[in-house]
Image (cartoon, rainbow, N blue to C red):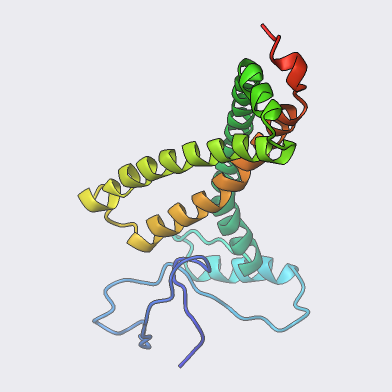
Length: 209
């Protein structure tokens, strides 16, 4: 019994596995192993790799040998996994920033066009906090409607089996994470337009054209 064994790397799943010793002369083997892992004593100098390669080439000159440390293999593996994620995350960050700037501009324009309405509400006795909550509440309501529609469409993907190799819990986690990110982001974008709405002077707003 050993610790978790991840055949395809430390980021992969850890299924149950069994190991059976095989001899080079075992007729059931059918092929020679393509790689060996050698554990060295601490402090072994790097020149050992060169002497090891010479010994291997002397034993099997028709073969090609390559020696790599497990540390280098791990770094290459992690780079291959994280570089696409980093590129995708950077692209997603720029897209979210553009969406935020667009949303901020739309809300700003909306508040400007509703100057008379907001001024009339202030004149009728609404406080600045109530006006700000109205603007943010409208944003949250529209966001909720959009999320409901988006979730319904997104759930069709696992139902029709387009990505059958992806577990259902991955889709559910993506939905939960999206909700946790979208609501604070939308509210943050609505803070400044909401603040602008509270600055509307009732007497000037009623005469605004």
